[in-house]
Length: 63
Image (cartoon, rainbow, N blue to C red):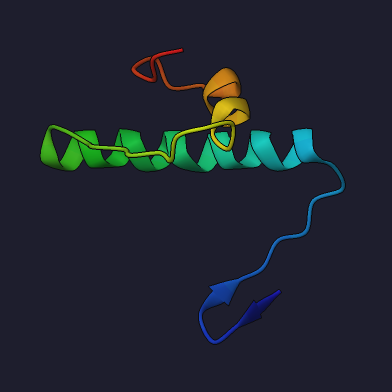
């Protein structure tokens, strides 16, 4: 669904959401590195990013 240039996606489960997030961030990181030669990604502390980091597909994400 698109509204005012915003895409809203609904996922059936948390694992499905995490997989989609990981794919999106991996593609964004890869693109930034290809274009700019580097990419900085800052995540909040605590337990919020744990599932993302655990399931990240990008080889430079430290686990």
